[in-house]
Length: 165
Image 1: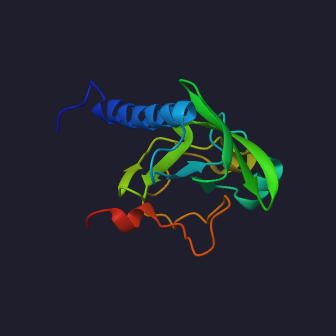
Image 2: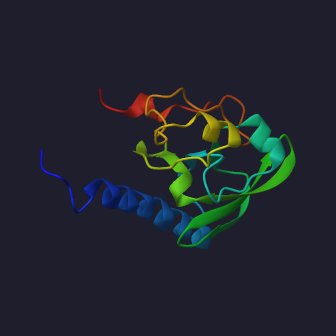
């Protein structure tokens, strides 16, 4: 196989992150239209992610947030978005770079994106053990536990459930 000097894989991931950026920017300006709402999964230790230590302790690898009824102060720029959410009735502000996002899903229209390329910062333990380059998280990982407030009876659905097999 010929070497890909253009790096279509990187260009594709940037384009997909651009879709998420554009959608969130529009929602920040006008609010959620119709029945649209989003499940956004991200790596909690990726560079630039800002979450409280309490949430990081609870979700040390990744977490999924729900932007539906109870979120506020959504701000979007080229590199990241910031949003206020409530966790166990405690308000939190999260900053999530688009490069940290693993998945984006809008169940109202069955639209989902699975993203790759987000890699957490290495810890001291990782540096001691690492002899080869870090590997990306497996695509078929267990679905993350729900994080944001959800209406009773709602459940987080893995993006894997909607992939064609």
